[in-house]
Length: 101
Image (cartoon, rainbow, N blue to C red; front, side, top):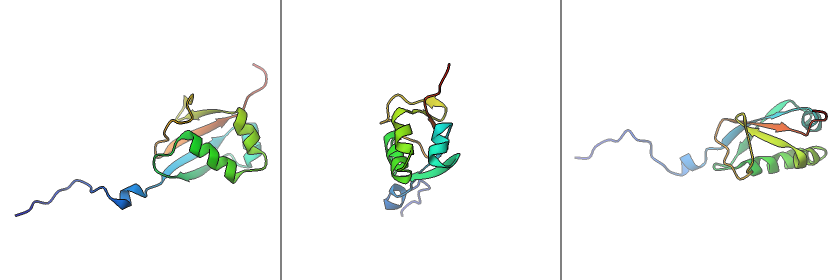
C-alpha cells in the first residue's frame, strides 16, 4: 500500500510563480516615474538589476537617467550588489541623489 504525502510537490506550477516587488519612488525618481509606487511582477529568481531593467523599459523617458545615479534599498537595507536576489513580496526603494547634506 502507498502512503499519502502532505509535502508540496515541486513542478512546473511552482516554477511559474512570479516574484512580486513593491517599488517606491522618492524625490526626482517619483517625478520621473509619475507615481509614488508601483508593483512589478518579475520572473522567479530575479535580482535587483532585473527590477531596475524592467523599470527602465516601463518608464523610458526620464527614469533611466535617475536610475543611473540612484541608490537602492531592498526591504530597508542598502543594496551594494545589483545581482542580489529579490524575495517575493519585497519592497525596493529608489533613492535619487539628494542635494545638500
